[in-house]
Amino acid sequence: MNPHTPSRPAAATARSGLLAFTLFLVSMNLRPAVTALSPVLDTIQQRLHMSGTVTSLLASIPILCMGVFAPLAALLGARWGIERTLTACLVVIGGAIGFRAVALTPALLLATAVFAGVGMAVAGPLVSAFIKRYFAGHSATMLGLYTLGMGIGSAISAGMVVPVMAWLHGAWNGALAVWAVFAVIALAVWIPFVQRPAADSGLPTGPRVRLADLPWGQPRVWLLMVVFGLQSGLYYSIVTWLAPLASEIGYSTAQAGALVTLCSVLQMITNITIPAWVQRTGRPQLWIAISSLVMGGGLACLAWAPHTVSPWLSTVFLALGSGSLFPLALLLPLLETRTPQEANDWTSTMLFGGYVLSSLIPLAVGAIRDVAGSYRLAFAALTLLSLALAVVALWTRGSRRGATTTATMAGE
Image 1 (cartoon, helix red, strand yellow):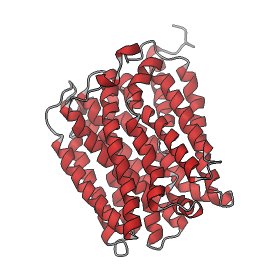
Image 2 (cartoon, rainbow, N blue to C red):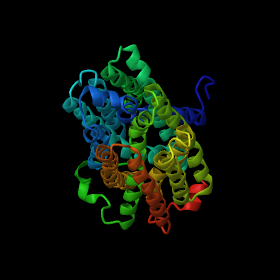
Image 3 (cartoon, rainbow, N blue to C red):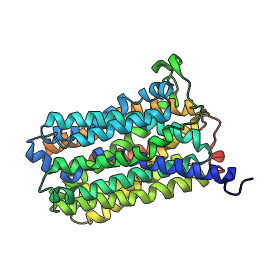
């Protein structure tokens, strides 16, 4: 062997490392379109003269799009391949965020939410198929890395949007648009990889893939929709309305933004630690239930005792509870399936119904705020939803359709 030629194991390890890093960069783009809004939401609402209900559409529209357009992932992924379709998604997301620099009316700002939501809708299921294809033996760990990237993207955008706005002399639109840089960085690394994809995409091609082929008739996929929808709706309600609630109880804009940043940073810890623990021990449904109850404790404190229990402590409970829910919910369809195509189909179906359900929750928060004149009643309703999530998660325990059992997952 040529001493200057890497051995096959070393080359495989390097390729796996590159794939993991690429996945991380892609995932950083899948939340800033929503999370960067929270610290400046009051500013946008005042300057554009928007009601709480209309303002909540900035969060609800991307979530709704992520549901309605999720089934496109199965179609586009089969036609173009996982890698090229993800490239298109990055372009759409980055373009939508960048366009916010000139989106100075409610209609234009809501349009950017639509396009960002479509890009995120197609990217989500394809990332699961990507993990199933390249990291089938380490699904929970890679989902943890995936959500870590989303958490870092969320933390940076939420934590820096107020300082950037101050640096731009109060230009909230420029402060929102700057996060298109994440897409530029990801594309710089991703495009060379796309030019050298593996020969087999792991997905069937051509007209064989139809929306009717998705597993609508599987009862368990509907349970997964409810689990995913509740956890997603709770997460986006928290990241959208935590800062406005903090402002309502007397915190400054900078302090409110710091609460969102703290939430995102702590979520990153559970993004990695809890899925890694589940990888070894199994029982993802039990951990979803536990996490939901912890999150519910934080919501209850904000709803009923915001001046008695420090919002900083409540935010810790919110973050530790909500941080693990997304990767664990994404793990559930992987446990039900055997192939990348099945993983793509089940995830697409789960995201379709789940995101449609979850889009209603932040919208309801804004509507309750308009009627009640306070966010506290809305956070009380979110507390009840966290309890419902715990019950439904435990309900999903039982025999699974796929060959991957809990014991197998723990031994991967």
